[in-house]
Image (tube, rainbow, N blue to C red; front, top):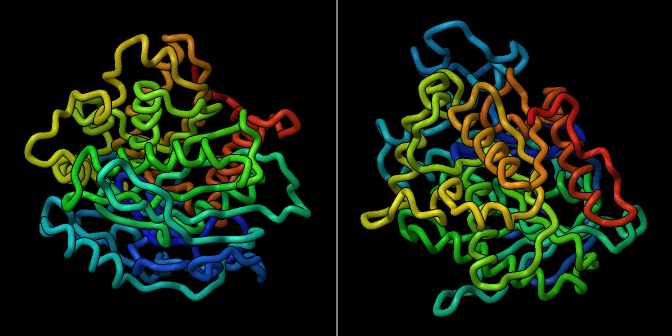
Length: 402
């Protein structure tokens, strides 16, 4: 559920780093991205190079005893240098670091490799109305080049990872750009309020508010009204799934697809992957325990379906849209994603599982460096673009588990 500032899925440059409950690279200061000019949208030029907070793999060394699992290393050898590099810069939350502000400072101080953003058509920073009684929600809107990807197009409401505590629009700028390019989609990236300053349900309410706004303004975004998508990585996947449940309760907009990348769907930490992948693969079970504590606060119920979507009643699960779920084999959250996929199938909801046994949490940010990440990103793009009548149909991963 963590995050590291990074680059995206297309082009060169150093990769973006992942987030504990999902995410990219160490948190950067809030503010407009390299393509945005505050209030207005403007075209994005340049090539495909991007910046990244990920240190050079050969130069990074994780703390002694923290970088490798105690038993046989199941991580793909090509991924091991990146997992070690991320471990070296990521704060030991739940251990030596127990203060959220300190964790954010550590991520912000991580070195970044120079580069440039992945090219998309236009980027705009703005706010949209928040939940009743709450402030407006900052969002960043990415539009594809209309010459390359004319509408109508899918519209993706994207929630970043970071354990509900870390990361922001800037840390996940590359991921949002990659979704925009791969799917030819309008992407609305949500800068939801973060725990522990704003525990459950504040982050969820923000995501739900943006989902409702996107449904109401889909025409302005060049979107197909039948191709609204929710997407998120790690904690962002949790919020995306919960926002669907909340939208069903409150009569929210119809959603065509949910794209969940290594989501956390149960706060109980009871699955075997929390033991099997407890340490040695960047994100740890100890990190996750701390993240959940920040999100729940003093009075949160871990069995509330809006906290742990896997606990939703059967009728609510059966009413959810089709899913595309990505999991990594060397991730404490592996079994969460698998359980979500299986629960949907059991309740008659179509779901595709894209499983990567040798990958770790956050690997999607390394699409320039790991073939598995590039393939996963391409299949996500295919799944999203297939929600429109003329879209691609290449979203279903090869060898998907049912």
